[in-house]
Image (cartoon, rainbow, N blue to C red):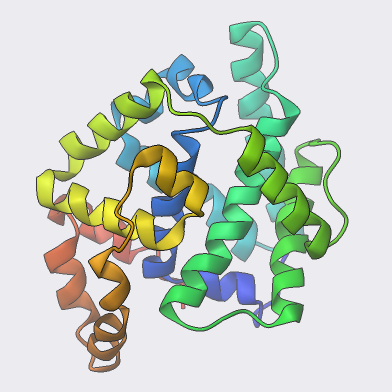
Length: 249
């Protein structure tokens, strides 16, 4: 679905960008009115970090594989979701599928912009088209046709589909248990830098996160070849190997 010079490959081949994509998504989807689906299988609340890595593997397979293999990966993803729907006895709402696609588009752009640079208009279109193709391959209806239309529909979904619930608080409790207190606080800082204001308000995230002022330091340390040192300090050591394996650059 992408070529060697694709901006989508640059985004999804950078471990640091991917971690930020999922920091934003972890915040927003905890608020989604369809978040109860995550609790049906129990996999995400039991081990959110393991679930992150399995999701990234699917995403990277779609982004980096030859087109036919990418389509097969999308088909497997659709089949998995279909199996869950059959076990529960009813379908995941179409709007919930669109919400997830929209999150991946939005946080891909936000994370890359934060760590590197803003996307050019053509790159924004490419990012949208790749995930639109994923949605179409999964049979998601009523997808917007252009990046501009997506921006409008994205705001509609943000305004309509978010609420704080018991599931939100249970997920955040699991984040804290897995990460420990200071890394959990760092996660909330990262969320606050990335997510839209409506998500910040629902989750009571810091309004002026100190992490926003540390991005320049990150870029400096990265340019000095100290990225692995920063990762070792900030990230849980038991996951360090899997995190570094996300790099495809």
